[in-house]
Image (cartoon, rainbow over all chains, first blue to last red; front, top):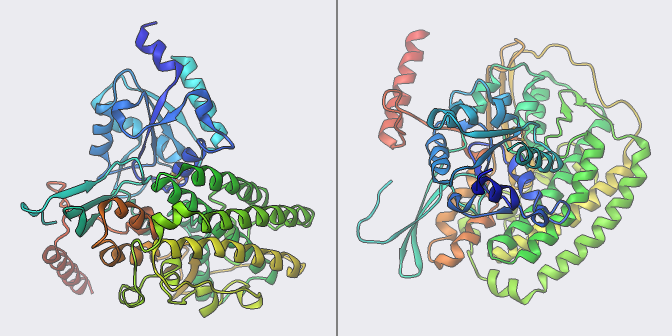
Length: 143
Length: 396
Ligand code: SF4
């Protein structure tokens, strides 16, 4: 295992990108930080810029306006990085499948710029904080 | 959007760590003072009104509860009221009580969420952690009643999908007592805190005249001394039968908005308690047959203000037009009145004070299909709208 991957698994710092979510997934992401779930005790920390992050938490369908911003945030994240598609919207568009302003799920947009992107899916609408924590742990275990 | 070459401009967004959603503010500054503000949104626009016209009447509540995750009880309720107005349906009384209770629980969790985020915005993490800790029991109650922590999907045309089971009512009452004690403590602690006084008092004042001029809604209006509240002015569900007060403050600053929100959570606890006691037995659903042609409106006092839905039916099984107007749509322009003249460091909390929700507000994005460029000029919109009118006239 390269030292980069080894260090990624120890204490993943995450950056949160909302690309058109309904706010629920975002709130549940923030909920993970607050006293009941408190993921900071595992070393998972929400940071303020993608340049500091090891993982991107992407919530929501990717709208036409948000797609270039998502790609830029992804390009600014140091590689290797894991992208978490959180919620039914980010995984496969969910109920907004037919929306005219929706360009695609997260994996489709990111694979266009980087075919080898590591993407983990956490389904649910919204996924419970427990599901998100377990998703992060499973993804890190699989690397 | 004009960018002046002489005045320095601070861009905020679109992806930035404080607000969860993407939005773009452009603050023009003179020294430390904000002299102008411009907002550019539509990062979150998903075309919900259009999708809604492809769904059946009974499926739309699931869609509109996903307009905004925090108001996921208010939007469906407003929609359902509009459809009930078309079809002249009166839901059973127990269903109205269940709707009242769920909407008030939602108000509590939304206001506590805001109080926590306000602490986060001014760098006072203790308030953030504390408030969100007290919010968890409310979500647990909602999960117990409806089966989900958010996106309840409980209201339905003609009533409610799930009843509040009689055996969980004692537990609800007990949890409410505990919550009231905690909220009392949080309210007192926040209102007596010298740091919060220093940081929030006199900041971002929205005067009563401005509040009326910008037609703001909800706690933003009530904190500026405008006592509007749909629950009292045009009672829906069971609010007319319960005893509660509309909270108002006169100052219009961020502190007043905090006071209004925190006191409203205590009022909401009062409402739920009465509703649980008065709730009659009986079914929570009526039989719904066809939806006749016609149009109807519904409005509901969401945690952020009045949310309004308009539905038109042609007698088929899906709405032919569905329009939603969320409270942030009128609250966001009031930044022009409250932010200009503030210091840059206070701008963020002033922007957050109306609890803006962009996923509710973003109803439109106009794009040029050849270049994918955004069209937002007045002239272009006017031209497009005239062209569409011409097309419709020719079609008729
Ligand atoms: S998955 Fe559900 S909760 Fe999450 S953003 Fe989409 S609609 Fe909202």
